[in-house]
Image (cartoon, rainbow, N blue to C red; front, top):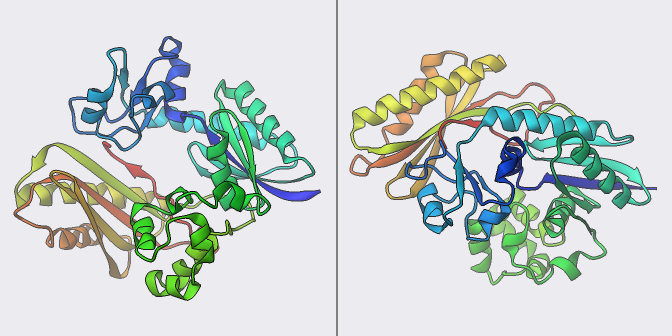
Length: 358
């Protein structure tokens, strides 16, 4: 018996939920985003596999998706409540598996901790349990830690199972670009490339001290370990505790005056702090996100002088951040995030619910 980590990831989850309640959409290019109107400013939340064949993917502006989509494509609005309900069905089915520890990490994914000889058997049991309970498909990555299990899932999609461990890590990942690693985005990969590090093997063989100089003592060590697939092994079923709440809006018409921006920031900050009030914990830090036209995004933040539950304090902090915006540039998106103090033993991982028109 050995300890294994399984990463369960739902296949095209949001699109699949939409097809489940509208079976006539099966086999069609389905694109979900915003209010479902491709003429409005919004981004794709998810695209069905049929839509992805046309180069449509998450985060793409709906207008761009509309230009790429075939005539039979279907655009649908985001329905947060429906996806949350489907997610709970999935997690409930997985909790019913014998001998597993379940850690939810998102609407459509979770880790399972198991001690078995053949983890593939548990993976197939998980897929059957989810299908029987929901009619939805999932893929399962098997690893000897969370990092390898998470990355393994991509090799199993769709509806498959893949095992990635220390034994086959470099055979599978060695020549892959660093961008394929969990947690390495385009900015980090670009900084790594500046040091001549472009592949996973090169990252593993890199000088850790050089990475520490570039990324700092914590992240430098973390990125170096990622090159060898190192990561946490413990699956924790402790209920997740939100660290912050965010509200953001993409505006159909650019905000062009300081008065418009102030009004928008007041509204977003008010909603964010009201969400925090429901948690019963004070706000300790406020962040402001702005996307200038045509598509440049910047984020700033500030720590409050003292933790507060006063609504106006949070709004004032957000307004102070907005005073640093460029008055000469039009704004297409604003977002405010209110970060709360964590309860003793709370989850320190940043998993922020964002609400608003995407």
